[in-house]
Length: 361
Image (cartoon, rainbow, N blue to C red; front, side):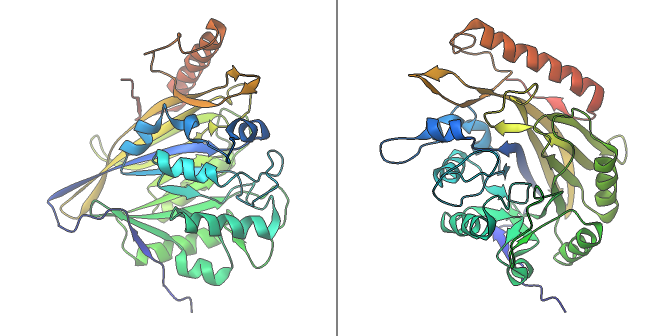
């Protein structure tokens, strides 16, 4: 019999009970560290990634809980980018200092550096007191820490995380990387319900890379999860944006949300549509012991990569905020390229997104 010893992690819990509580969630996409990103972050004393996030830090820090997909390992030196990622530990530090609360580690690059990569990533995130889920030392570790339960503002979230593959790299024993398997996911959801969370969230690494439309398999998995009782399905992996759906139980009540792909948050990718991502915000309200999905909106982001002193720099910008732009860009054509991509993704969302609105300051 499986022992239920999952830990409830409180993020600055409020001790008092109130008639209504509100929780603002923020989900961001793939955090990658290609070799040029690593080179750009090099300093005389180590690495610094914090400048990458300075322009979006207010959004990350403002949310009650910010969740990101960490699509690298923290396997230590020698550091490397694609195809087998090992990022400096300072990347996780910068995310934490910029306002990210939870890192997801079940993705197709989880096993890039073998057992050392899986285990050292867990070790480092634990040492930094960064909440994470998706990969584990072994099955015992998984049984003790999964599902991840988070509590803030009197609202308890059950957070699950799975990946469709590990790029044909076998998961090194005895480590565990959560894989998309309907039988296992159903068992995990049933276990999660035993802890009586107010809402269950499933973060899924799935789909086809560079495809702007969710495929049949993604839709089938999303439907399965919703039928099992998951109310928020948050997707990553395609490296481009895909649509999102807010499914209503009535004219005024939101039953569930599916975000098929958040795209890249930061990377060195330059292929079409890979430089634009989205931050998705979802507000929960708990009233009279019932939790509602109140509303959802999104903010487009752009990875700006200027050349400074013969080194490519990386900055995540809120793409729709024109203050200081295009003067911020070294060349007008770079600004116009961002605007063209933004227009294309707005068109995509008009076709594929329901219930969400774009947030523009």
